[in-house]
Length: 198
Image (cartoon, rainbow, N blue to C red; front, side, top):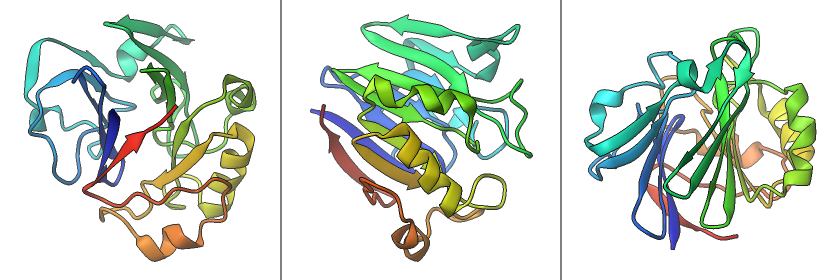
């Protein structure tokens, strides 16, 4: 079974059916004991790029915003049957030239990793992709707030929407997430691991 462990803030770990391990924006919480096959960094802010927390397998691929976005082009990567596509991420605090999100396709499941962003033009194209899980930021300080994150959830139309990165300096804020008025909302708390379904 494909699994997602939410570590807190903007950090999470995905484990494929074959045991491949992907970390996204390592920084917060626990759950870094599994050696990584892939590490994804959406941008170079300190709360998204603590690669030193991770033990890397031989041949581990690290894809940061620098590899993901070159000459204004969002790049695609194919690594051992895992497809990774960089997508647009931006807001007043985050420059589109140095920030990305990712769409990961593994085991027949598509996962949208928003990174730090507000609504983007590219999100209008996501509904037709039939994304299974969208992980959206919503702190309302450095990124969009609850209302805009709900608008993005409606626009993207994923089967499941998970709100993360909700309180700067903290792992999570359950009362805030409970207030989030988004369709197909799935609440996942730090140190909780869920099965990902197609």
